[in-house]
Image (cartoon, rainbow, N blue to C red; front, side):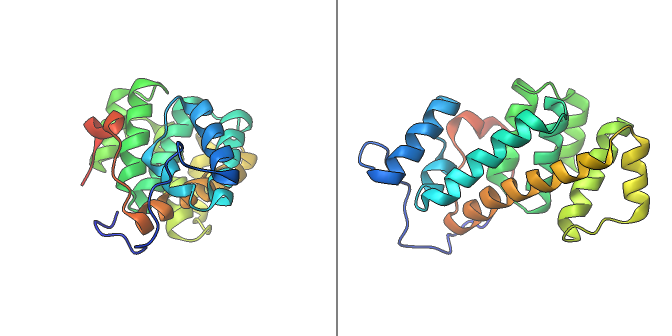
Length: 189
């Protein structure tokens, strides 16, 4: 993530002083996660961005059929390829503390080393290639993904996750969102 924001007149929205659509979406966000992440406070400058993010994120989590650890691998792949240190830190913490990503898999992803699980490796590879090729992965990558036990519809759910993470990754780049204290042990530079 850029150390310097590209947007200079926007600042995190304070829920205590927010009004209208900003207040409504921030209240919803805090209710969902229990605190206000710095990213959400920045996204709330344009309530439609935060609303779209929360909606798509919830749908991916609830409807994709991917296990929580698999979902986290997808989010990590997108965030790493997009160079978003904020989301990489946040999803690393979630992978470690909430989603059950095996420690050796998380360590390999964070170190950008070979992933010691064929299934997670195929999932990460497809997601990363989808991002880096603007949705045009090679046939071999798709075959490895399907051979690992995933279904074709899973590719479309990965597209949803990419869209959601792109909203957050790009917002974090634009505003140089600082990593929240709760994620700081997983900070990357």
